[in-house]
Amino acid sequence: MRTTVGIIGAGPAGLLLARLLRRAGIESVVLESRDRAYVERRQRAGILEQGTVDVLRAAGAGERMDREGLRHDGIELRFDRRRHRVDFPGLTGGRSVTVYAQTEVCKDLIALQLEEGGPLLFEAEALVVEGAEGDRPRIPFRHQGREDVLECEYVVGCDGFWGVARKAFPDGISRVFERSYPYAWLGILADVAPSHDELVYARHERGFALLSMRSPAVSRLYLQVPAGTEAGQWDDKEIWEELERRLETDDDWRLERGPITQKSVTPMRSFVHEPMRHGRLFLAGDAAHIVPPTGAKGLNLAAGDVVTLARALVHERETGSPELLDAYSATCLRRVWQAERFSYDMTTLLHRAPDATPFDARLQLARLERIASSRAAETDLAEAYTGFPLA
Ligand code: APR
Ligand code: PHB
Image (tube, rainbow, N blue to C red; front, side, top):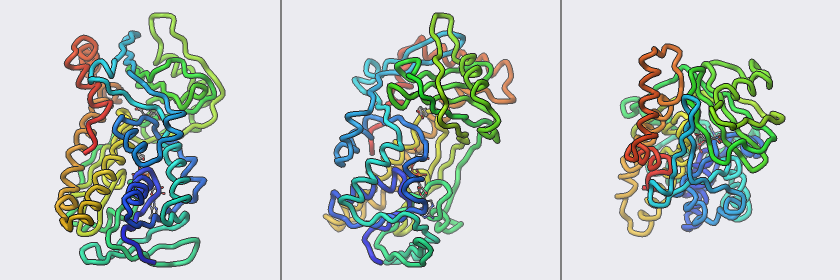
């Protein structure tokens, strides 16, 4: 099998890249190790920056998002039983975010790819990337039990944190920067209308809590739990009671309960692999970097990477110049590190570390107080949350 761009992984990074290349007339093949149902069921975050919304729309993948996505003009910070709203458009010159689940983005892109795109093979596991330094890199893969090879001009590893593409970087070239956190998120989906019309990020002595949503009838909520917790350790009643405690306010706000339909634990990690390119192999999305979910940046970073890469590939084809491909890693990493910084700040602002001292707790409150009382501090948060311009 031969193609121009071999893409490993059909998460948002791989699927959006295939779509962008297709629109530009560049051939690609996507290899995805899981089956379609698994990819379409996987629960992930659900906040799209304005730039991501614009890209999906321009790629002709925005129809359902425009119909079902919920525009959000702010978030609420909750601390000390108080509520502080951050108004995005007012602070950023009109920017907002859209609540539309990553799962839905993937479903839309998969449907488009199967209808009008190049090959997208499910249950096709890339085994390794060979020859990244030469002219014709190759991806040996196993498709429904049969071994085959995809020969490409370029290979893009969109295969997430656990993928194989990153491993093809020689040891002397890879540099890894990482941090793990001693806590995780227990997430639930519940069939109940969200108890607030915007996201609520709560800092509480017992730990962080987040109220989010999937639709006007489905709530998505998270609780900070110790790293290593398993979802089964919490029963439904305990989850609601703990959410209630952490989200409690001094006014008459109430948390509505409903049947929990899904429960899972998300680990928290910061991770960057530099560089994001080696020869004809490129990394995009979680394959190159992970952020803790507190800033909702993962999907948006993946979109930024593939937009940058698609533009560089088109530029090379049209002008013969590799300058944008050569700049790919540095261009992406500037944005990646800003997202790493913001995600780390939001995480440490709102979570309770197991070894936190009373001093640490007071500092968190002072940081929150500062955001609530200084337009400059609040603007900093609003700008980062709504997103830095896509490359
Ligand atoms: N061969 C083929 N496919 C693979 C392989 C392999 N060897 N290894 C992994 N994959 C697939 C996975 O099954 C998955 O579908 O690669 C895909 C990677 O997708 P994601 O993990 O969704 O990563 P990405 O597309 O970069 O999206 C980033 O996902 O984790 C969230 O917070 C993150 O929102 C961000 C987004
Ligand atoms: C989500 O809705 O899943 C979500 C929202 C905001 C975050 C993280 C996750 O910061």
